[in-house]
Length: 327
Image (cartoon, rainbow, N blue to C red):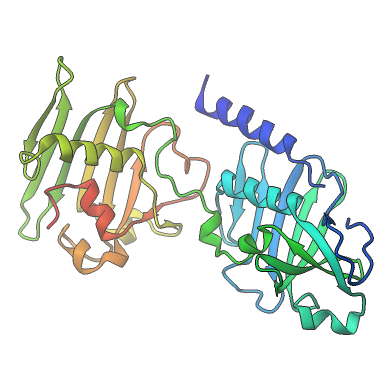
């Protein structure tokens, strides 16, 4: 079964299973716990979080399902979204409970953070969208004020929905570099190189021999080779970027200052190139860590359906990817 087929089956099942349960009537002040939302939307196609006070806030997001996977719309680009967090948010909305109604007066909405200038959540399903204004924190701890639009009541609700709407867009981004099917135990060979400031190229290599013993060569691998190789292969298999690089091109980024390739036991191979725009050696990664970014190659990459140039990574990640080659 291909990676794409597996993703379609699993993600389709999850989306179909998501049934988001309009608010039932509560008397003002009554402490009756009822579902905040009780409309079955069927297929959830899109969700939006908008802070009406700041249309350019980093928490404003649009996430939609394109029939294959969840996609995060950044305005100028589309990137893969984290399915686990989208599903957790939808479940938090479905599981939210309205504990009591606090007011039905429109003039008081703003006092609870659910007036015109509030954070709004829109969950769009195949039947009817649900729109929720999420306001300030309330008592008891963990509760928040909410209003199902266009309903005229403000309620105290519980659940984790308020946590999700306060997260930046990067929280929703799927930043894993290699497919989830890549496991550390499947890596059988890794080779890397890095360019020094004086033009010298340093190299490292590790591979499993016929007896399944790791053999190493190059700088930084001879001391404690088992530990170093285990950390190296784990860093590769679990590699997650800090942010997407969208607009960079090879021309503007310059030539790679380091690179690596690794092979899996099933014959697949993957590669990485490290670039530091405007600079010419791997040593610059420590001096200008905010500039370092990587490009990846190989089959089934999470980014392959999107116009993503690469990923930003920090200096600690650079050092894990190129052990012994970066001071």
